[in-house]
Length: 417
Image 1: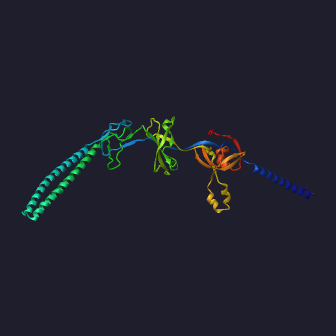
Image 2: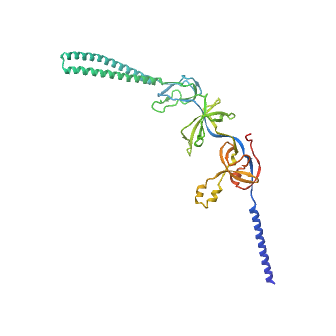
């Protein structure tokens, strides 16, 4: 009897274990087959006008800007201007103490007079030597002097002729020295080369300045024509290739936040300069002529949006709709072809996810230009198709081809009529 009871207990234990195992399998299959549904927003593929822009920052500067540096050194004894003052072409800007240059001018003038006197003396000696040579020729013809005496008279004439030539050259040198001294003296007084505004004054009355004749020199002031202003912005080497002279630009100046300004690209740097920083970024300067007149001041901060390329009536989708995924061919072929992984790995393709019923269908696309909101689609989509436009995590991480989705509504903005 005890053996039968023990046998029945074993049977019931086996049945319970089988039921538990079966129930666990059913629940496992239930949860395993349960599909994840991703909540998304969609938008229609429509035709739009797209304007591509390059954004850059920089400073406002005058188109005409002249740095005033003296060509001679000395002490500033006159400085009748101040910063911010408007001057006309020919107005006195500064005067350098001329005493040293006056002395040089007088010395050069005296040397010239001395050279001229030496020239006059040499000319008189030439007349005397010429007369003596003619007399010697007559006497030689009558055999009244020896050959050596005749040669002495001839040599004397040639020496005097050389002295006259030397005196003329010395006079030319003295004249050049006087001209240089006069020029240096004239450079002690500096006049405005253009009509402009003194935008920067760096030196003061009584200060000693260094001329630019032998070194960089002292920059005393800067003249700027504030009637014609431009924005000078820095662009990266990837953006500067899109810029061309004549392109339009929208400008925002920090000092005039409630105003928008327009401009035209007027100049593009041919060579790069290294911007300061850890990575020494390569930058190219682009100049934009500002159309409007305003109370701009040199050095004001500006942000420029340069219109580089435009497309009209093209298929477009929201910018965030385009993402990247690894191609399936790369995953499938890598095991069979040893070179497939090397060639195709790390080469994701650009795709969008189409909303087809309740499923997301991945479609490879070829993109064109883009603006702040939309990107041009050159190939891969048709007008009227619905693409997933949100949310960010769904597009960039969660969505895969064939996954179930739940649309939270369309988010279309007005398209081209």
